[in-house]
Amino acid sequence: MNQAEEFVVPDITVRKNAGLSHDTDYTMPQPLDRYTAADHATWATLYARQVALLPGRACDEYLDGIAALEVSPQRIPDFAELNRHLMAATGWQLVAVPGLIPGDVFFEHLAHRRFPVTWWIREPDSLDYLPEPDIFHDLFGHVPLLMNPVFADYVQAYGKGGVKADSLGGLDMLARLYWFTVEFGLINTPKGLRIYGAGILSSSSESHYSLESDSPNRLGFDLMRIMKTRYRYDSFQKTYFVIDSFEQLFKATEPDFAPLYAAIADRPDIPAGDILPGDKVLHQGTQEGWPDTEDA
Ligand SMILES: C[C@H](O)[C@H](O)[C@H]1CNc2nc(N)[nH]c(=O)c2N1
Ligand SMILES: N[C@@H](Cc1ccccc1)C(=O)O
Ligand SMILES: [Fe+2]
Image (cartoon, rainbow, N blue to C red; front, side, top):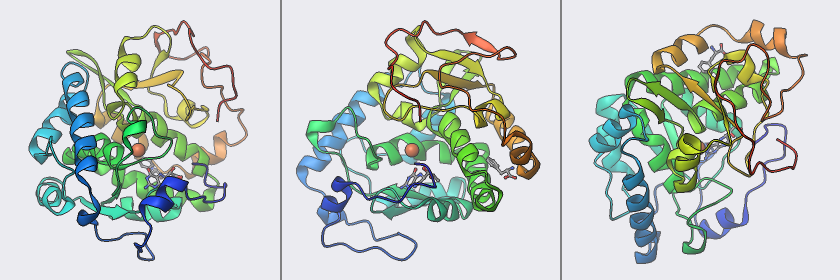
């Protein structure tokens, strides 16, 4: 969500949170008694479908993380149980939130190694696609990699960067970095291309598409390039950026971004599907099936 846009709470979030309240930092106790048998069944369905896709597609760091977390295939996890594993591995904690929260609050949590997880799960009629995060996306998609020390540090650094970017006019550029790494990142490994982005890992169709389709571009990671690249939040990505390692990602994003924001602020935005001279092209997309509407 664009920071400058007004913070609008989606209908489903309002419905799911009826009668519940949250703190000023948007955290709340995980309302375990609100989960119905149908909710747990939705979790089990989504979990089984995704887990079957992961071998050979998700990166090893993700697979190691989800195994070590002992995430239940059958029931929506209790955050307190996952937090014991997370705390021991990397010092991260999950906090329950009502849904999307304001960007500044989100950054503050990450900067303190707290990962906001939407507590509720999607309805059975929207198993494949939901325009906002639910617990399946937030937990299944994001949390396993927080068991990895390098990635865990990257997400915290990102949170601190977000707090800082606000006063530097860098929020939109920083949001793109999150989008093309944490949400939709791919990683090159000795075994082949793998997924680490949570938006892909929680989507059955995009797990196939991101790796196997000829339509999208796959380009080598390039920090400044990413910061100027528009993206899609209403369809599969036109372009995926590929890192070589989490160490590369951490090192490339470690320097102070203040001079970078100033240097590239006036450069034009790059349309989501464009390839430029200088891009490290791993695969040039055929553009088949791309939406003809405007990028974000
Ligand atoms: C910071 C940025 O605007 C970003 O889109 C934030 C906003 N609020 C959020 N809130 C939740 N619960 N989860 C998220 O991933 C985000 N992303
Ligand atoms: N180095 C960035 C912070 C950051 C780290 C990692 C990811 C994103 C942002 C800054 O100075 O703003
Ligand atoms: Fe996400």
